View 1 (spheres, rainbow, N blue to C red):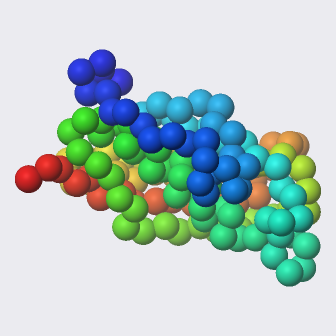
View 2 (view 1 turned 180 degrees about the vertical axis):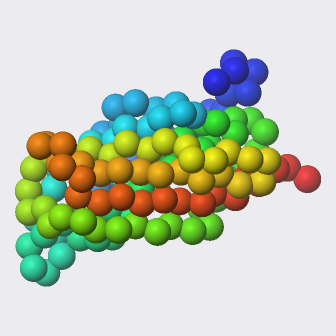
View 3 (view 1 turned 120 degrees about the vertical axis):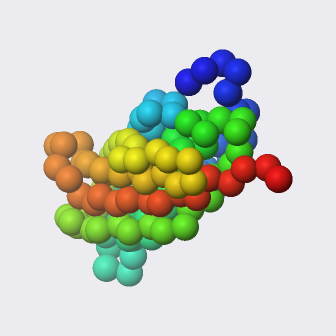
Amino acid sequence: MEEENAVEMPDLTGGFVALLGLKLDEVDGNRVVIRWQVRPELHQPFGIQHGGVYCSVVETAASIGGSLWLGDRGRVVGVSNQTDFLRAVHDGELSAVGTPVHRGRSQQLWQVEITDADDRLVARGQVRLQNLYPA
């Protein structure tokens, strides 16, 4: 990312990110890597990772990457999130990797793959972001 296009990211150590226990390992406009531990407070009633956590991580990875890519030209907002749940997970560490599929003037499309410690795909999603520019 160009230095003149840099955007100041908000603090990503508190709020919902902290509630989910997300750790940001790699963060730039081309790739975002997030890790977290599956734990009982993130389970759905049947003792597996809640699908909403997957959706939230997919949205978080895409929004961070898209924001960094757009930089100081504007802001992004998610307009669509489609996440598929592929494998039940009870515990352990999960990792999400977000990468862009398309980055245009008005919209971006990011894909995010979530894997377990054995590198098995457990969920995947995509988020369409709207690029918003100042008036």
